Amino acid sequence: MHRYRRLLAFVLAAVVLTITARKLARIDWGAVTDALLAYEAGTIAGALILILPALAACAAYDLIGRRLTSHGLPRARTMLISFAGYFLSLNIGALVGGVLLRLRLYTASGVRSVTAGQIIALTVLTNWLGYVAIAGLVLIIAPPSGAFGSIGFVGGAAGLRAVGAGCLLATAGYLAYCACRGNSKLRIRDTTLVIPSLPTAVLQLGLSCTNWAASGAVLAWLMPGIGWLEVMPVLMASALAGIWSHVPGGIGVTEAVFASLLGYRLAEAEVVAAVLAFRVAYYFLPLAPALAVYAWLEWRGTSGMGLALNSGKTQGG
Image (tube, rainbow, N blue to C red; front, top):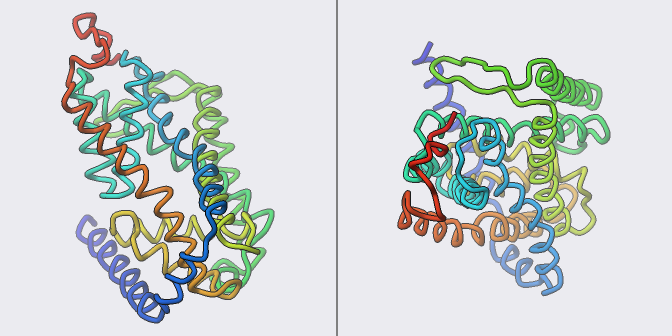
């Protein structure tokens, strides 16, 4: 089964990359450049302002793990690790940026690797919890049309609404589970996780929804005439395609998905230009401070920010 899963992953990646390469080859990159240069300063400033809630939410993701593991690191340091880990993950890949480097920062700060693994697992759960909730909401309220809405295996608009209802039921089920089993422990293979209480689960949902919603708002802002409800399903489809392709940051894949699914509403060059502008705001600009934060935390090591390792708090519960 392991070999079959690896083969399936390889096939999916090959399919996504082949479609991406063909789509990108047909795009008029000169027109994309013209569309980028046509953005006014006010439009760029608005995009940078709209993305700020998403950046703040990502920096707060690891506070969920801090609350549930009681690892004792200061909130500020935890948020710095969360920020650096998230945006390094976006740009250089989930395994290296999201897991290995984040694990390194926590263990260098005196947190046990087991506890750090629990924090990372909770952060991943937090991120995708909002994804599922917003996907359900959007698919029920405004099932996508055009190339996206014509996907046959989900039965058109009715099928998409059914998928949306399933997403909302899954979200509600998670909240109900946390309400009933909150603060108890759940063992998954070699990892033991503390189940969030209902207030913590609601906080998870709020942080993740803020990140995804703000990202979609920036893309809608950069695409005149295309609303947030139209952008969100495409953004979510591109996120899945990026995972299947195994390309760090989904570079090229995200652009191809948006051009394919929204090219009927706006010129492909303008769609790709908007995605590139979004990539700069959400991926590239935070990368420099994320690298600086990582270097600083690595340099400070376990002595940084007034940690009292001998108190035992930073070892995790």
